[in-house]
Length: 142
Image (cartoon, rainbow, N blue to C red; front, top):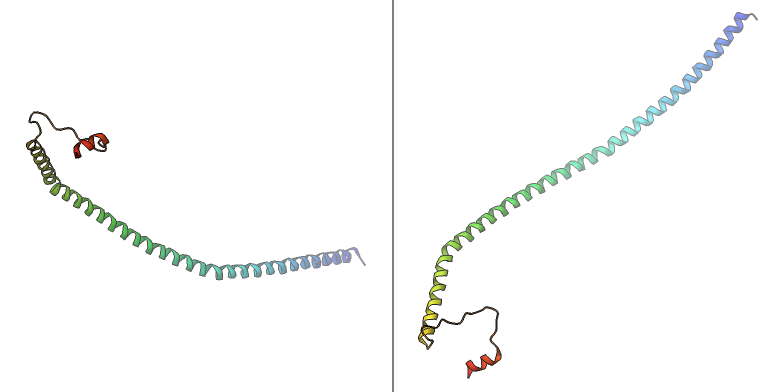
């Protein structure tokens, strides 16, 4: 065998080993691509229902927010109506009630003076929350 033939055999063996390594690499790459394709399909199968559920939840939340907004608007309207009613009642009855109370006080004071109080002596001041001592209560009753 000559040197050229040995070199040819070595190159052929080298190419056979190289092709074998490339074939193994291509087989593994094909397996990886199949696994990746299966994984993407599984994720897609699971993600579509999840996205549909999330979309339904967002729609439901939007509906609830619309209801809350309507309730808040109604409460604001009721509050403004109550404020207007309070103002109307205060302006309508407040002045006349104060006048009636003042008139009643004047009548009581005049009747008290007629009943025997001294004309020049002013009535005792009334202090709300104070009680008359027991000794003075007995004098009034007896």
